[in-house]
Picture 1 (cartoon, rainbow, N blue to C red):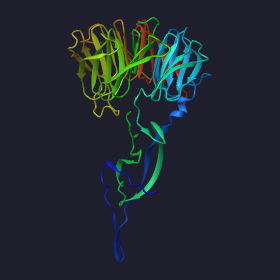
Picture 2 (cartoon, rainbow, N blue to C red; picture 1 turned 90 degrees about the vertical axis):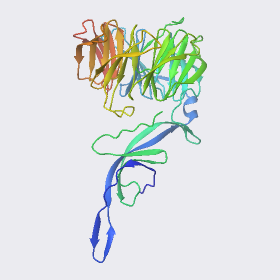
Picture 3 (cartoon, rainbow, N blue to C red; picture 1 turned 45 degrees about the horizontal axis):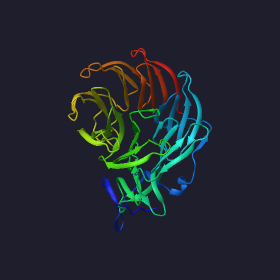
Picture 4 (cartoon, rainbow, N blue to C red; picture 1 turned 180 degrees about the vertical axis):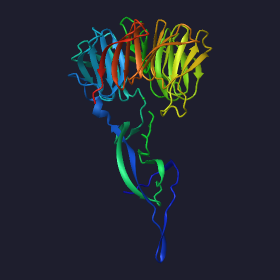
Length: 424
């Protein structure tokens, strides 16, 4: 098979000239293995005319976001749905049910109402009976994904496959490391995994607790959601059907949202954006703190914001791995208090005088003096990327290794209470 695709990048391989009797010709050929990223499309009718199904508990295979609502623990199975556990006894979480929601990545709860994304739509479900979730409301076209192609539907991701091909030196893709072909993309395997990112997505009822990578946040009777570019505001005065209020552009590659007091702290690849909620129906930008390009979850306490940047991803092409402490006492002025070098920091959480950080496992710091954080302990051997500190004594973490729950009453010696390992 020959490919006639747009050349993106690479270096030209040297041709091999072979001298044969009576003639001179080029015979340069190379057999290479590629990772092919084929676009995946979903038609609107494929999900808008289906219901959310409660299934028997299933193994945790590809965990995503973590959420806590009362004694229930919710763990997203990326783009498939939500695992529900009864965490009344933290020593023994009991699997209850799996809510099958194709295309789901994020979630939030208010009372017994679940808010979940389904591809481009926002769903509101009544889960008062966890075994019979009911869709109460669907708001269409909230989140921007990867575009819509007539006849194919929404582009929702990419499927990886390997292909092996022999090219000669006259092929325009000969010797290239990256190239495109139509909607697809290809990357030569060269001793490392190829990286590719198509880009992108206190009221009357109590609200749950999300991790630092959440894209859904709640404040008072309002729900806020971010996609790659925009902040979307909803009123949950009627919690069964959030009313869409407005959408506003925040910037590029928006990643996370963290409500704090009457503000929203929004993390992007290049900045922390701070919005005031004096009028919660229409958040207003108060400040922006620029930083080097990097994946950027952010959490806050009374005086400081804590931001992690990590390298080795599509959102950070440099080698910086660090924790930034920002002084937010004099908003809209934001100043960096100190930068701490890290291994590859990701999600984080604060409670009391403690900072919990996912970095080469779990690290716990005394943050009494933000200018001089004191590392108290380091739990190694687990791959985690997000954390929720319910109290200074009770920590939940999630990652590629699975879910882990710790008693941190003695932060120098955290004690494992329970775990839910990923099933391969």
